[in-house]
Length: 352
Image 1 (cartoon, helix red, strand yellow):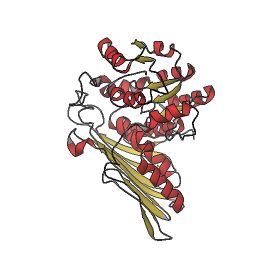
Image 2: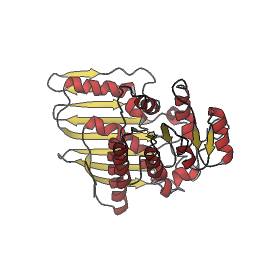
Image 3: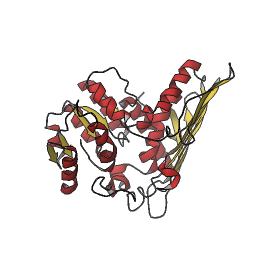
Image 4: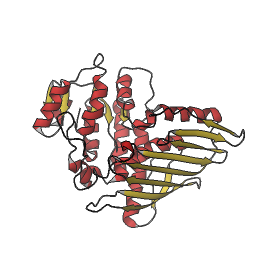
């Protein structure tokens, strides 16, 4: 583990701890000696170091990179070249060049690279994909509406933390991870719209070619807290992408994530807050409503670390959050921030 901060301790390590029969906790890295030693004791790591290179020197097979986003490229590339299969947190990288360099590196060294897009593994998303296949799709994309609100207001403000965390079991987030643009790359778009894009792009089957973005900040912060963008796709389709930071404690801290797509022959909806999803195909006039039991719209990041372990063990599982997809999200976010800074449309710099 490179970067054992709040989310890694809350989510990734407990998920992996359930698979102790198949893996050993060998080495952990983070800054802060007291916090490092607490994580090592809790999960039984043999090596604990503030230098990430000591993790790579420990002859590891699997590495989880959960360091600040500005360090993802350095840490992930080093882990891949050390021979490890890797899961890296989102956002994947802060630059398009670094994103595709990691894609190329993983392919060159023949190692699996999984990105922590937990939504992609939810049963509701798999049901939607299957329904779209069964229906024959919705035809050529004409328009889409992608939106998300999540409880990041405190995290992206001056304090850079959540009110509920910061105790022996779960350390408080390091504020600079979120509020220093050198480490974070930006505000809400980097923190959360990366999730929206990682989920939406495979479902849409298309990547925007142009972005026109606007942002606003809450008092006391220079980071984008609320985001809005117009999207243009290569076939002439249009879309909207919007995100807002809400307060912890509102809506039970659930992400309010809704995706809609309209095509030449139908439309689909995925509303994880309302727990509602359907596919409509004009030709048969049938609305295929998909099963979404209570609670099934809530976020978890169980899928990516489990996929990493299964792929490492040679099992036949699908990497639903591959590096190529993550690189496409970086391309769109790069255009988003360039557009917001220039107050004009920005073309997506794509290598696809």
